Image (cartoon, rainbow, N blue to C red; front, side, top):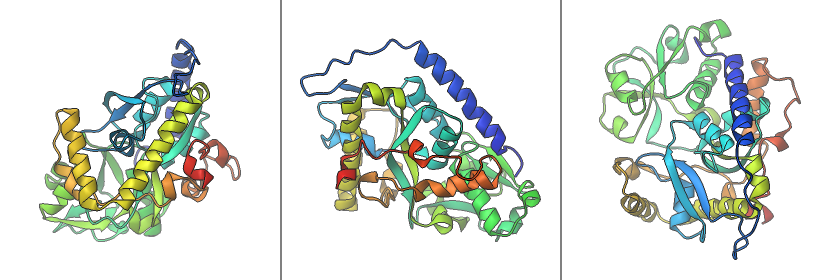
Length: 340
């Protein structure tokens, strides 16, 4: 696959380490005095996405974070940027970020921990990787020499594409002939229809407009799997253990509420949240929400949630077998559902 390569991504994470250490070193230590509720802080900084409600935002609306109030810090441009924001202290938690990025984070020595699931793969009829309806592309081999659109390099789209190509029998040399093209946010459909790329990830409305054909989905490649995570800086967790536990468990409760409620009820709640926060966004995407696809109760983790990405790094020669300690990737200790 033409640009990027694994070592380039690991170098990127090394630069994040350096930046995070410098920024954290310049941060004034916070007081550890507890509030009357036994919490270290009643404000929790986070990043959001237009037209989307995350488990964290639902948790606040359902009252599971009270008395903690969320403090919106702006839009997340992607998982790596969200993780960097949490590590630098610009936010207290990452935006929902690809699990493979968390593995790269640990491989690079970044002082962060995955604390709870944010989303997963499931049998979703409203998402996948699409070509034009009359495209000659029908298999992995047909992608040789073609362009594939992505929102960001080194994240979920790239991982899944490489998995699809490998399962399709392509050699490393053939995979390198498939080119990834970074597209501006929200432009995947336009790029595909204008033939700037040959394959692109599409969701609900783009699919509903027709004229496109699905080539594969994440679910087709990995089945039910936690693929999205929330990351927090180890420094924040150490200084705010009670606040961390309150927020993580609140997210877990929101995940279970969404699972136990009807789809219509959840979407109505999402619409209420968007209306209440009064940001320049629309609710077009909400009607395509089915579930977050998190297979575990309360967003808890197991080693197999990360094994596929560790194995990928080993296969690429960027890690040695048994080099990664899974306990350094994630922790369930802040999630009260892990006590059940």
